[in-house]
Length: 210
Picture 1 (cartoon, rainbow, N blue to C red):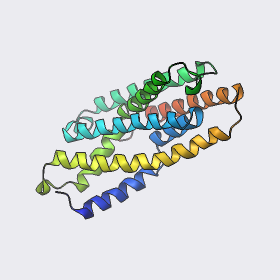
Picture 2: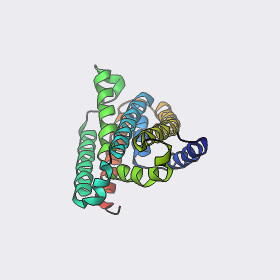
Picture 3: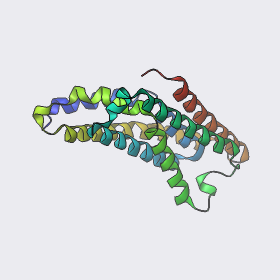
Picture 4: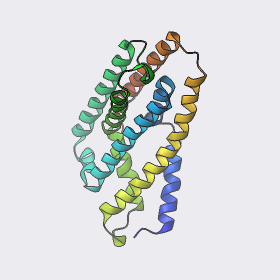
């Protein structure tokens, strides 16, 4: 069983990492600004699901594949960049009434936001390497099954990360609420979202250092 000191130190480390701006924070902030707080929350659920997937992979020991096989890392990295560029193209070419509020099927739109958050996280191999670098420092085989400890730490990280990003979503969503309604705003919002996706794709393509 993990001791309370380990949990507290890991929670503090998770908070420090969560408040550091990164691709996930930028994505949910942009989504919230462009399409509202609910869209940001759903996107964050997708991001969290992606992080949970990486935690499971780590628990199974598969994250080390990226260290053992460099080509696997690059393959996932470029697939992620291609997906983000596809999302950017969708944003740039979408009609001005692309917001959730104007769609006839909000559930379908929320599913799309969830899927985008999930895939953007899963297809970023640096998330797997982040887990591989951080988690072992807090694991102790003498205190029980390592896989179970990984899942406990992942749960703590997801809670802290969601709480921090929740504040970001609330603040970013407020920017949308204060903005002028109408076509000019929706046009600006979709171009802004497209630029964010393009920037995240460029970051994945250019950032080959592990």
